Length: 157
Image (cartoon, rainbow, N blue to C red; front, top):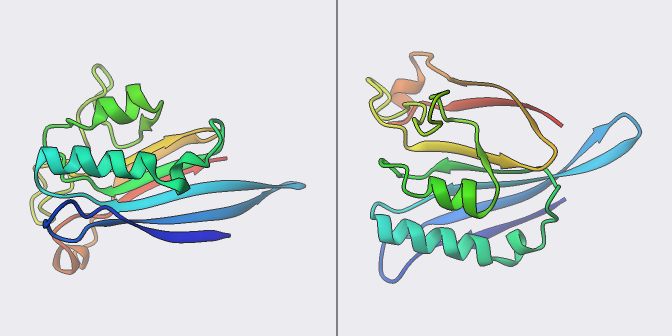
């Protein structure tokens, strides 16, 4: 297992980062590596674009093979889905938190937790992963624990 923190702080903005973890999953007789990035991006569109660039140029991301199961999830702060094309078209990810079947660009609403109106939290995936289900966890305690509702995504490797 590998793990590291990737600094995504841009200029003198608020400190931001991504946690990277490589998890070994046992499936029948073989072990499969699952690459996971958990991030929190900045508030401005330009800052988020730069942060995505830092992530994609990191040694952790660059060392991943094309078919390796990979998940990038977290608070993208991307109200207008401006990063979606970069992840989907540029790096061949699929967005598990897209809720629109027709256009595929409507994000699951998770913010604010007491009355969700915005889709700020995203889960992108690629490689040998099958997306089974996505939902918001809405127990009443989460509404006081965070200003975002947790996202639950089920995958099969």
